[in-house]
Length: 424
Image 1: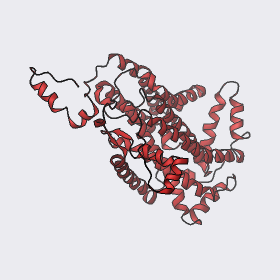
Image 2: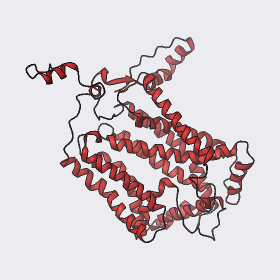
Image 3: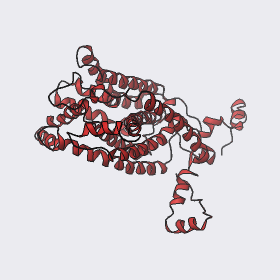
Image 4: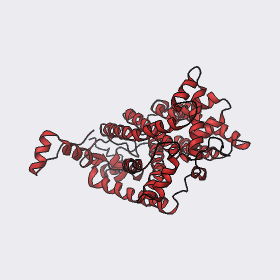
């Protein structure tokens, strides 16, 4: 399903360009007349929010790179120089640092919306897989960016996470040495992370283009999970969804701006404002909030190798959702048992995040193990069984019926069985 090439340029310059590079026609068919299901709600606006935030992160990052020094003895001072001496440097730094958190906020909402409404199911498996690839690249990019200020939490976070690869049999020590560029986290490590942190956002942008391309082949999913059947089921992207996306983006930017101007350090760790010291370990090493559920899973396994495998598996298992969920019904709106299981999983993920921020001792260790077990049970046991035993609710006849109600003749036919509904 794709938009029809109805773009007819009137200006001579536009006509000249369209005959040689029909990019305006492509944009018109993809973002103006492209038909979308008419029942899309505001949960579908976070894709556009993510695109904006990615562009903002790249723009602010380019400015920060102009003043940052990727050298172990100068990195911390260069960040302070940006904050104190560069014109509006504080604004760019806070926008970039909090922008990473806002990106993950929108990303997790986007992913959970896809899980709730079954956006990973046929025919959108490749679309989902590209989204998971974006997620993995984002995790790597944010982790490397967190190391760059070269504060205490940056340094020791890098030390803890990169040392996990040493648990890999036979080649673990070699992988860790390669990541470090030596035998400890030092200047070579900082340079490698800086180079990759600058490169990966452009790779993410490339995958986002593929993600949007893959979206425009089958079209967007919708709250009913039904595919559009007639023109009545869809509306053009502009003005209906551009206005909705624009309003949602404005609300999100107000939320984002509140963090920048009023609580810019709320999501940062105080120890990261202390310059990195290899001889002084922080009392409690904690990653950024968006890694906390996976950090809790890592610490819940007593084996270093087992914890590492469980942590990476907890991320990669999302890629197998299209095949683990065997139900033919996409949307949780019509799946009462799956709806309960979905919200139980959300609670599990939030609790894992809370446990990941606590010291690994006492009841927190037990809670982490129980929550980790349920996390994997959701994917490997609950979803496959629900597809077999769950009895879904009746689906509406079409997307339009879910919004506008059934046609009048259908209502009259139901009210008067002597006059059966006419077939189309």
